Image 1 (cartoon, rainbow, N blue to C red):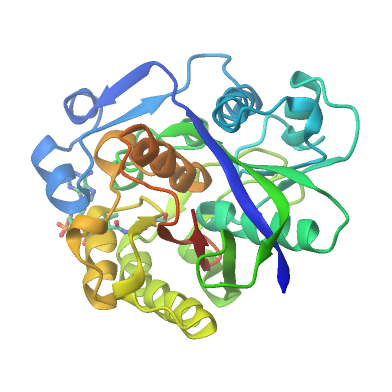
Image 2 (image 1 turned 180 degrees about the vertical axis):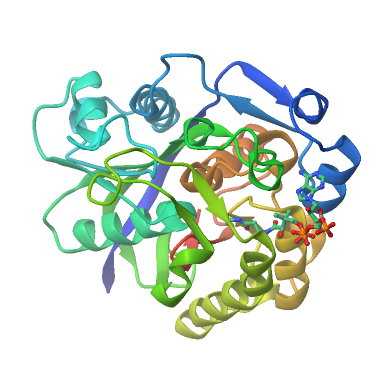
Length: 325
Ligand code: UT7
């Protein structure tokens, strides 16, 4: 017996060149390296160059994922770009990626679930691939949060960074065994009662402006670990796996304390946690594929490893996925 699964064939990333350190920030707002490191684990983040677009970073990450998978862009028939910082209100930045890659078939669209965008993107592409409608997809997370930050607000501007990560997914018939590769289970949640805890104070139908990110950090923090562990438990229940079976925990990178707290509550050993928040800050929808690319570059992940992705962010939205590499 076989089952149709979405298998990750490659992963790639792109980071803008400019590094912004905590010391740099301490010269702009009333903060310190000590405060930022202690509260978040962040040491530095990358900032997009003037004029550098989300779609350009997404295209760079997509090219790197295609090279890793040894595939030509022409074989892609679906592009899902998770972003809250698109180039324009419309068209979707995904169609710019499609055009930049020279692809003229299939479909490309943006998906907006803030920091959970990559997990939402995986779930969406997985469903479309499993339905038989498409055969090979790029799922990309790309953000230029530096453009929506209030650089005078020390409670938010120290937390975020820019970057992009991408995976190539292919629909494959896999044997129905525990060892079979691909996305095993994805679980998505949202609860709009929390929409004012983390939001942007502008938009096309409200103010007609782009707006700035606003967050009640303590409130987000208060809910994060419980929401994350809850949806991860859904993934464990659906698959029969436990924390002991997980080889690599690749969480959304918002705050080292949230990552470590979630791993601790789930019973995942610290050595299995992939952490990039120290170097990238919170890159929203880009953080999971950036962390995955980082772990792959360090040759930490082997074929057959069980990966756990999770994310939580604005909305609130949250989600988790179990993937056999
Ligand atoms: O991707 C998902 C979205 N975001 C998140 O997951 C973020 C979730 N929240 C957090 O990570 C944390 O709540 C923060 C890192 C944002 C803040 O840490 P905290 O331990 O919750 O600090 P706090 O908000 O309770 O603030 C403590 C103090 C405050 O001063 P008072 O009121 O106690 O006098 C802040 O004004 O720290 C002050 N503060 C700062 N001080 C120096 C806030 N930002 C800064 C700063 N530098 N950058």
